[in-house]
Length: 364
Image 1 (cartoon, rainbow, N blue to C red):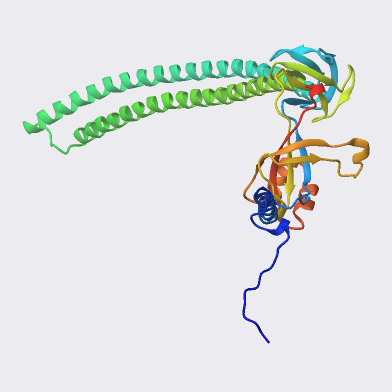
Image 2 (image 1 turned 180 degrees about the horizontal axis):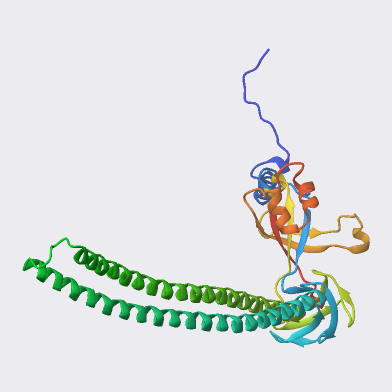
């Protein structure tokens, strides 16, 4: 039989809501639960990202390379030496450029000697042409004067015949009249021919003079061009034969000695600036790993041969991540190694990240 009534349950003291000290404990448990839920939902799970093709940027260190093959003549620098901008560091004997300069000087001396001989020959040739022109002009002018005088005589004779023909003393078509008129006309033609011959004599002289001037200009051009080439060779000899400091700094190391033979591009030493710059590195990551990188994220650079216990690592932090993938040409331009560039992009695109290396306080 069920008896209606009121059911009463007696709770333990630690479960009673209004028990003493319950509220602080409940708030603590609620806060811990909220923090745990937020950490699970929002906090990124630590994962490992691997970058390849890490290149340490030299920063303020400048590599001193040989600009041409030669032999070290003089060495003006030593390790730890402070140098100023423009100060000579070493001098290299460049046999190829030296021989080329000697050959060019011999060619120049030969051209100058040939030009002097040709100038004397051209001067004699021009003087002969001048004399020939003057002689021809004198003769032609003398002949022209004689022909003009003779034509004047025939013109006067023809005028007399025409006067007599007008008086009907002689016939207008008489043989003497016709002969005199023909002779006067022929003299006029001869005088015109003499003027043409005078002009031809002057033109011939001008032609010879123009040929001589053209040949002289060509020889002068060859001589001046060779002189310009010699100046360029001397400048190359001074630039490639004398290595100067391109800025103020300190010599970190010297890789050559006096008398050593070097090849073009061979490292001669290292020059560091007076103000140390931040050390940076470049690394390439897959797009998935690159998206996890954030500015300021700490990283560690370790050698690729997995000997961290021996060589240790370098602490770094992310400075910048490119938004666009890097092409094989971009990677090759940065690393200077086409084979490594192909290896980096063979599995897919990569993204470039710039890292800021941390200095050891003991070496600052």
